Amino acid sequence: MSHAPFRIDLRNLPTEGKDISGTLTPAFFELSETDDIKAISPVTYELNVLRDGKDLLVTGSLDATFELTCGRCLQRFQQHVEMDDYQTEIPFEDASSTIDLTEPIREDILLALPSYPRCEDGNVEPRECPAQGKFEMATDESAPDESAEAPAPGVWNVLDQLKNR
Image 1 (tube, rainbow, N blue to C red):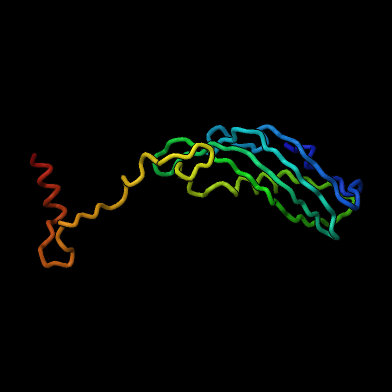
Image 2 (image 1 turned 90 degrees about the vertical axis):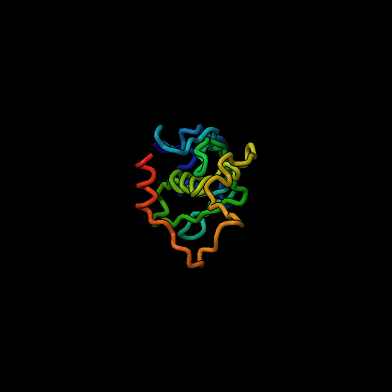
């Protein structure tokens, strides 16, 4: 699917560049229903497109809001991506061609999302992760020193005790 605002006809691009702005529905991201990432707001863009030799320079701002799954508690939370100083450079071969910026823009926004989402890092409704601290190793001051010579019970002995209950 190609989005017309991001199709730039190099033959008609003014030498001083061109400003493009607007909003596109969340369908712009083409995320599947089974994807963990859900776009929940339109993408808003204010961009300037300028030809510089054999490159197309795109600068401006992009923003959208997504719903992600916390990697720790598995609850859903919202993350707003706001790229106020967006810039990309797209090389081209033929000055009489049309360049579609859809893929680079979509990819850059999605890459701005966290690789390992955590709900406490969400920036729409800040909160503590309900699973925070539940998966860390317990440190018990009264626990015997692991370097001591006391024999550790064998794993099989412990399992046998469970079986005999």
